[in-house]
Image (cartoon, rainbow, N blue to C red; front, side, top):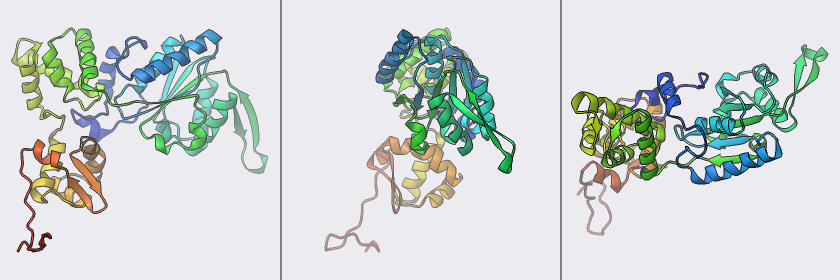
Length: 356
């Protein structure tokens, strides 16, 4: 497990947050697929990655460096472990924020075994000196260790065994081109479709020894925001409800009742998401309204609204960011069962600003 991975507190506290805390990461370990054949979804990525790994095995060489990008919870860490398993190699796991100095990276690289897989999560958050050292390590399998300071400093070249770097990032745009270009294979992880999430849920239910019908799995999948991590989390919460309130069998009615208790609605919106939409619609007539004003109305920090709630609302087409502020879409009014206010117009057909 990646104990160095930073925890997104705001996301971890939410049932539909894509970030996972350490306890959840331990549970996820038991549900992770062990090879590409077990991995569900990401068909193009799996097909391309399978070719890369099979060709490397046929040549008896280490696999090319791999860059995986995409939102949290889509399987980047799982794929890194599968790469190591397919190459029959050990894996070393760390994260960008854990590497604050070039010496931190040098210590990791110098201890790698030949063919080992180094998984570097949130690679875009690595320090610049370490990033520059990584360029040479990826391309030439060599690093220069600086001994001494000032004019007397000496660079001692250190040869590295061939290894495979698997970088993962949620923000590929922050990677500098020189680093991005050194990856032999890059892949972007897409959000999952409901049928794919249903397969994930059935597989997880089987591993957890749960009984779930097709309608129950579909109900959970439809509220999982296209993210397997969220699907597995919702499955465990529905399991708890079914064990306490019912006979332990997860049906559509049980799933609906359980997720109503946890305030996750039919589109996967939770209390915070609906609070933002309700404030935007009921207090500001659908906008436009500034982010700071909206955050005050919801009683949350500006960063929480912008980074935690808004991305999903925008992706779902319920909210739009405009130069004038946040604006609700017609779909937002429909989802909350509200009627948009009718604009008042003057005799010339133009909107009357004073409502006359």
